[in-house]
Length: 303
Image (cartoon, rainbow, N blue to C red; front, top):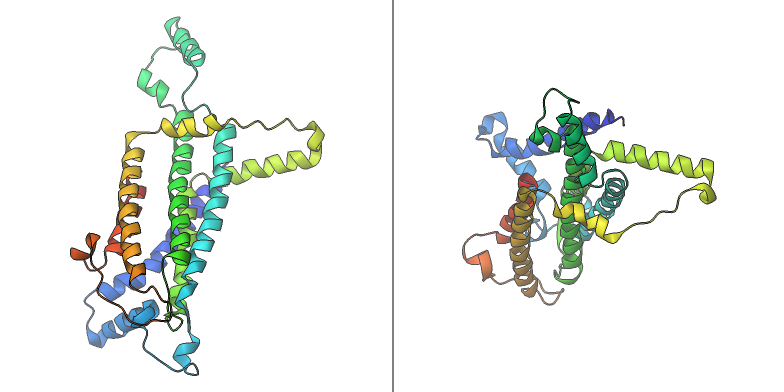
């Protein structure tokens, strides 16, 4: 199956991530004031400001026109759920239809071994047999399904927390650039996770749709999905994936607790007063919910 567009998509995503990261890196560098260091740092702070870090201004001012309500955080996770769910369903369906079984059936590899024993090949490596290119690709596609499931859990949880745990003040604002950056992240992150096998998935789905249009429903084979076959390949992934999942769960539990603590500080939405949070990681670091976010996304590196 032709997957030539895969590297192109990955290249575009890489450029997008570099472009999004460069301003942060530039603001972190010790650039002299004369060279514009203070300006870059101030500009980044202005773009990323939200909530109480946004300076009060009248609604008619130019600054107010470039801000949106902080409760628009909800939009990030709606977009994240839509994009991640679409990618997960498409790639999971493709993996189920074309990438199973993940482990060859005994009859298939016994016949392969027999052919080698009777002289079908001059050399035989059991390791190379198990890790042949098609099998490696199957593992890769199912690993993509695995990480997209974790991403789906993350965005669904954040969607719930934004609606039911946090109580944003009506006066809380955030810069429009920060808002667009959040939208970009929750589109680019799941796309990046799926980019290596997304082109072949799209090609397979297009072929299935075209076949359905040409043949019609009556001539199409019945689609029988066995639930256990949707999950069995995930259980056969490597230990790195499951260590990553454990790290993900650990970070998620701490972030849930930290967000519950923050949400309890403002039980009334009309209140603008905050108290110093305490408990969990708040006694050790200043932003434990962001630290937990880093821990959560470390699973991608490990998986």
